[in-house]
Amino acid sequence: MSSTAPLAVQLRFHGDLDYFLKRAAGEREVRRELSEPTSVKDIIESCGVPHPEVDRILVEGAAVDFHHVLRTDSRVDVYPVGTVDLPGEPLQHPHVDRFIADGHLGKLTRNLRLLGIDVAYDNQMHDPQLLEFMQSDRRALLTRDRRLLMHRVVIDSYCPRSSEPMTQTVEVVRRFHLSGDLKPFTRCLHCNGLLQQVDKAAVIDQLEPLTRIYYEEFRSCTVCGRIFWRGSHFSKLEGFLERFRNALEGVTGTT
Ligand SMILES: [Zn+2]
Image 1 (cartoon, rainbow, N blue to C red):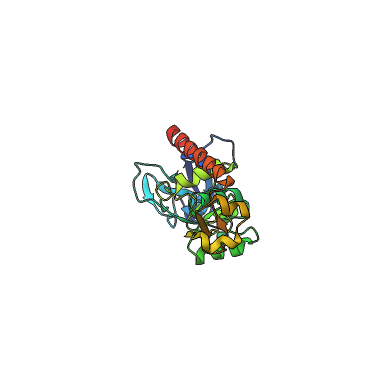
Image 2: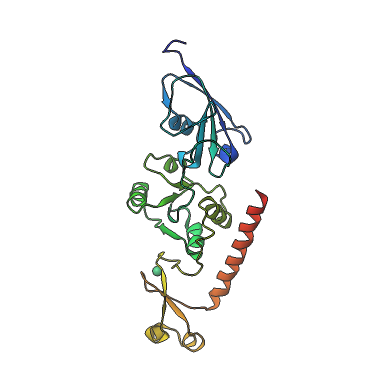
């Protein structure tokens, strides 16, 4: 082959990475012709699959990283996070516990905060601010926006496959191995601040008359100062927790 002949690259996307391919569901093979040597990262992303979703790349059976440049005809196998028994080292961090969610994931953010997970969220933020905060505060990005996922500054990130918030919550907990980090009802749903126990006497002048009578234990947000107690909304939160646990076990049991 002369140096000017195109390279033929045959890619196969494993696991659920076909979710990102720009073709019919179930089709996993993509053929690319390249006019010049190209990094595997660029080739994979040209197929629609964002780099934070790729955990292992094998070229002719040998593990490579994203910077590997293809110079000859090659077969490339691309695997998602969670695939076991492959050569090489994972390309993604398996465990991350600090996040920033984009402005479309408000319900997912609320669910994760309910579970005690640290999630920054501001639906007024534009993409550049979101990416800047992600970097400066060293957070993993949660978004369903593929352009954002493919941005070169993004390191840790996840695209919830489902549009349904409870399923998204389960997906994130599983992807980042968070089930050992859950501390329900320890974080403010409104601002992400941590809650602390406060004496009733310290907050009594901020309480409604019936709340003063019926409740003894209070927590306040260390950031925004909101006060929380085991009022009527608490049973709803406990219901959420039970549904979440059932969903987590259900999904785990099927894979
Ligand atoms: Zn707060």
